[in-house]
Length: 205
Length: 205
DNA sequence: CAGCGTCAACACGACACGTGCCGTTTCCTG
DNA sequence: CAGGAAACGGCACGTGTCGTGTTGACGCTG
Picture (tube, rainbow over the protein chains, first blue to last red):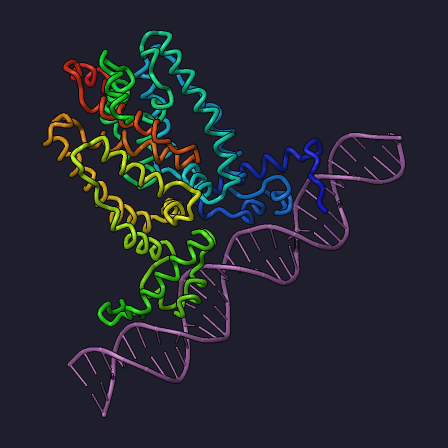
């Protein structure tokens, strides 16, 4: 019975070698062509070592993305909400644009068919970033740039949803002009005029 | 050299057997566990026959979905835009909810890593449905339920985007109440008040 | 009735997976 | 400073799926 390994005795040099090898192979071949065997070979590590610490290829890449994307996780706050949203959404568009050999697309695809990986992706990568988004939006409410009654769940849906809809079906990503139009529409929806209450009640049956 | 096969001589009984076998296996095992070999075995067909007419497993499933989803492709038009949007979006939510053994999720995942399949999915399944959506929205404009200046691309993004964002990250799908709130927000964004022009110009820089 | 193309059946090599075993190295413990 | 447990690299194995190749039977077309 292989007892659960002891993290204290883990070789950090192997871990680093495996992660950098995975990063290089993703950049060279694209996520789909990367195999555990190739990672192990390039890292000078044993497959057994990889399987000891990660359950799947996706888990390795998830940890890789988590490290490299930690820098860009924070939402900017220049004081201008529209500018900051544009900056943040543009960064996400870059991550999701398939021209780059970004492993993000491959990881998302694998998570769609691997429930364990999906849970890790959601809890370790996405939820913290959603929390950051909510912080930024609440700051905008405090600054008077967004209605205090604005529904922040709806804000997330309206602002980020279009990107993923287009990503899934390989539709073209918004260009800067259209992104501005999208942001304007979302903010208009979130900053209701005086008669908004009646409209909402009507639509929700 | 295997010349391109002659569609006129194609065996329709094999085609039907392969598609129904694929449907049964998807329902029993889920998309990910279905293999070309299993489809061929159950259909009483040869793998070679499948590869002669379809380039991949995904292409078979795409044709299967295209047939079965043809019935539900049309947007309803009861005359009430909000009701019809709710009906249509609820149907899409059902397709994307992972609890069902719907092959849609698996097909989308495979298309993310297979450019040829992605093109077929977009052109054969998605674009016709987007066209239907635009027809319905234009009818709403003609009926005075939607502003004639409403941007129908934005409408698609705001209404469908949230579903895919949640689908990708395995976040919970909107319940009926929240779906109503989403529709209300989208329609509010699309039906600008008098001062809308200035807001749009501001956000798009 | 002749022949071309599709058909089912089976065999085959290639590839990646995940695991087991070996001898070696590392590092904590007493 | 020894002793040993545990992680390590290296290697080989069995499994499963893929996509292709080959063969002979069948049926439609001209």
